[in-house]
Image: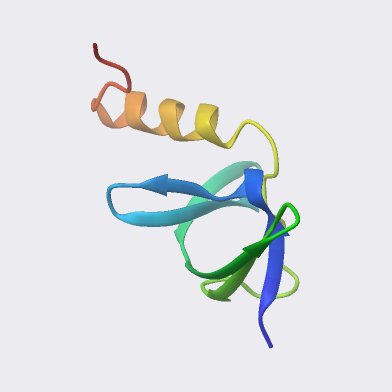
Length: 77
C-alpha cells in the first residue's frame, strides 16, 4: 500500500526526493521513491511506513541546516 504526504513534505535533492522523519528529538533525512502527484499530495512508493512522522513545513530549512552542519554550505550565487 502506497502512502501519500503533502507536496511540501518532499524535497528534491541531488540524491533524489527526500522527506524528514521525526526521531525522538531530531529530524532524519530519508530518501524516498515517489509516484503520482495530485491535488497537493505526493504518493510515496518506498521509504516510508505508515507510523512515520514526517515534517510537512520548513523542509528546505531542515535541509539547509543539515548541509551547514556537514560543512556543505547551502546557498551560492
